[in-house]
Image (cartoon, rainbow, N blue to C red):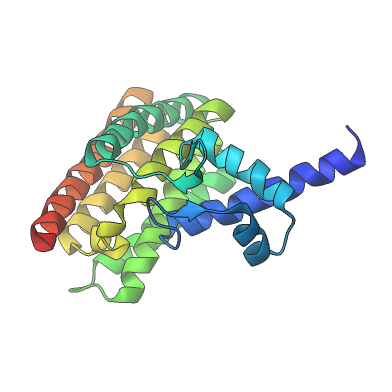
Length: 235
């Protein structure tokens, strides 16, 4: 590959990552038009990497192209969000099975144990403040990311990440911290993580798979309840 092409690819990937974060964090909400010239100016790049980045995000399903109108951030129905959770449960459950059977590096095991220890300290409190909620979100992401990375299957990893992106991109009607505001829910999530890690350490793939699927389906039920509550408030 020519040096220029390699550099162009790197720039496009960087722009795609930055745009992806803006979408997932709610700064570019559903239906938002994405104009190449405007985005290029905001990101300090030329239009070419922006155009390429939008193509990447279209393939991921985060944006969609309309003839004569250009790109816009895609909106997902609650049904599609719950479908994404169902797919994610199967994929991440399989990742746990692979990790349990093949084993996990000691470094990764230490990372998971550390997240569980820090999580336990937070949910032992009588209430959660904003900092605690953010910490729980971060620890949860580290836990899931570590398992996916250790599964050693690139396609599985990419598809699971894509399934994770769907609810993050479209549930702006629900403040993200609200999904981690229920102390009892956080404690249940913590116990799920403990069960998952124990199964992985025992090298029990079937139990690890089932524990992860149960964990993600519980999260989907919470999202559905929060969505319904938000719709009632909006009405």
